[in-house]
Length: 139
Image (cartoon, rainbow, N blue to C red; front, side):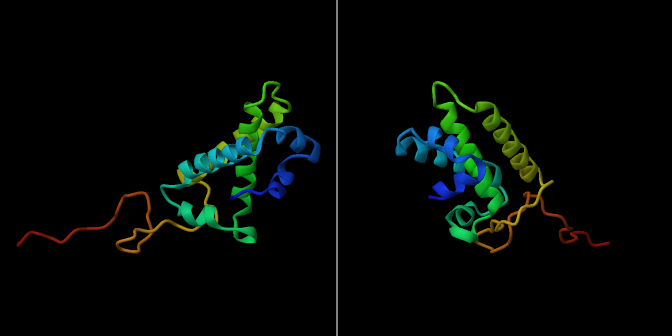
């Protein structure tokens, strides 16, 4: 799994984490998968999400790990009836989404592997190619 229990300790206190993770492991795993997919939705057009989310340990991008943990915790709290600490989680969730929107818009450029076209090996960009085609006139 992309996020470990240790990663959650960076974004939440030990006490808050115990309350949040009282849900069964299946709910926690589901929240993590939802967070990864939500982040991938923003990154997929330009970045190689398979490489981003298959990285382990120190090879992972720390900012992606932090935001994935924030979003997963937000998802876990949203599933709880009392929604303890939801104000802080909501604020961190909104900050994560704002950052992801900046990445998707090209205003923020994280250190992530760029997606490449399998056929040509060229980097996928925004889909617009610049340049002139061959001249087809004979004057």
